[in-house]
Amino acid sequence: MVELEHVDLTRLQAQQQREQLSASTRVDVLNRDGRRCRMCGRTSAVVELHVDHIVPVSRGGTNDMSNLQALCRDCNLGKSNRFVG
Image (cartoon, rainbow, N blue to C red):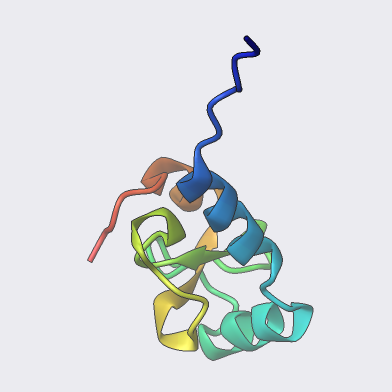
């Protein structure tokens, strides 16, 4: 009997949804947020900005603009998959 490797479908679906975020949507989010991290306020002139899901995809969040925000790398990595509201 062959044992199948367990695949975390939620994580796989979340990764696929993040990958489906278009470049134009990323630019729209960064522009809407003034190219500034919404948590610490640092700008894209100083830090690398990421487009973050406010409600993580792994917890049911979507790619809708209202669920996306600009975060610097440090704030985004510190947030992980927690909902910070």
